[in-house]
Image (cartoon, rainbow, N blue to C red):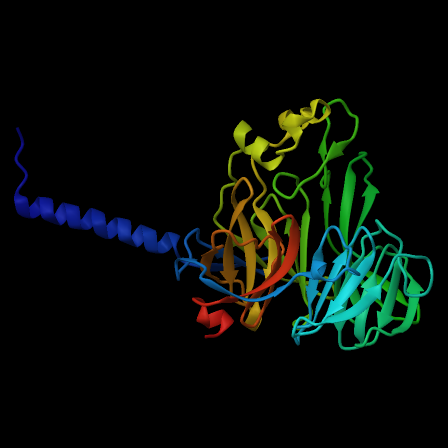
Length: 385
């Protein structure tokens, strides 16, 4: 038997540990590479500041159903910079205004065909701006002052998907390529109330937006497994975040469509089990005509659930970790990975809108929905103290 001196064995173990530590340091390092003159920020899987479970405090609740005149069914919301709130149903094209103190300020719009009115089921979207309140629906936009008085409206060539600021919105269009692929295109649309309209292409991807029925008859889409283009804008810095949600690669572009940087993070898409699919499509097993969806579902979830703008130039990627589950990766303005946030138990953040001290959301409360705001208590570097 060969005897190894204790001193040499200790040196050998120390060398191995030192080597592993050095390798880990290399793996955890943020790299910036130039590809065709464009900075690519390559982030490691582990954030430098670690993973934090969010601690929150509920600060405000608005229950619109306390008022008999508010009859919206599917509630969405928009929070203004001063704490004013619009609660609306995009299917009904009806919106209600509430003050910073939660007081009811009245109806903003109602369904109809007249001035300042919108047709139901046409993608209704309001947006606070310096000029007042813009409302988009179908191929129409209306401008209201801060008190809700109509200032004017006009028709649009493009269908607004995400309002950006007083003169821009994001729109997705579709076309067919030479080889018959369905191509989805993300455009930044410039507009004014004098009927000017321009488009800048930001991103395109083929065969996205739908999980097709193997029989060739239609298909369906969801946020967890369907390939699609994600999109978010930060009007203050005049940038757009976009990309293909199946990849952890975020393209940051300016309003001219120029690439400013590409941000990536080490990530492997989560595998999907049959139980996972039944959890995501909980209604499908109960309907014989929809069970094909369980078999057609992809074998991996998408990587990016959504991108969100945070205070102070920070931004976040909602990284998919399982069926209807995600963690929130936080980046600085240059795309460097800072930390990961875990949503607090029992708090819905899927559509959270962030502001200086926390976020707003819509949650189930009994048999209906309410608007709620939360203060984030344990991330002072972003959300204050």
